[in-house]
Image (cartoon, rainbow, N blue to C red; front, side, top):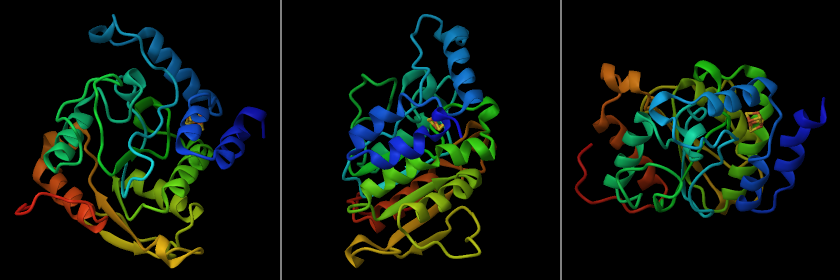
Amino acid sequence: MTDAASWPARAGAGAPTLAGLDARLTRCRACPRLVAWREETARVKRAAFRDQEYWGRPVPGFGPPDAALAVVGLAPAAHGGNRTGRMFTGDRAGDLLYATLHGLGLASRPTVTGRDDGLELYGVRVTAPVHCAPPDNRPTPGERDTCRPWLARELELLRPTLRSVVVLGGFGWQAVLPVLRDAGWSVPRPRPAFGHGVRIALAPADGPAADGPLSVFGCYHVSQRNVFTGRLTPRMLRGVLAEAARAAGLDVPAGESE
Ligand code: SF4
């Protein structure tokens, strides 16, 4: 394994804090294809964003270090997170996700534009198992596995407060369950199948019982295609996020009818 390819495992495992992890992550160059794609996209740009400086680096998770709920997608979008430097910011998927979190009282504002827009999340961390934008939004299995130590360490650091995870989409589900095992929870074999509204409970594999259990929810991805076709409606998304927030002990407005 090259020095660059082993960097996520070495640097991720040794990060003492989430801030330190994020700083190390943004210097990662372990996946040659994704490094080339994120930088090429940042150089060529989309016409609508020609005047903007693209981030063009790995995109760290976003949200407080004592989050009780994690929302996990698959990877940043080429002209979304890879442009703004923040997960689910700058594309339609993020517009719906953050508007829904705001509606539930979990985000400070309903619209997001970039890293300097003042957005705060309350008890929620938004992240992904692959931190660089992949071509066609599809990382290879090898890239997914190479990136895995970053999310494993992020979830391990969140573990004292983390009680609930929402996984967006079946590809994310396949990627996240092994990471949850790496981060210290018992994942059944065979692995539970993905579905919208599926809920599973994972016990801590070791450590104090006070660390768990962890409720994991499946939700169709907030992709433009899913929303456009009606596969995922705003009401469906709100329903899963509200249930997961309650499972995490977060306050969601009373009287929600999902
Ligand atoms: Fe590093 Fe992950 Fe980006 Fe690969 S996808 S270069 S492991 S941050």
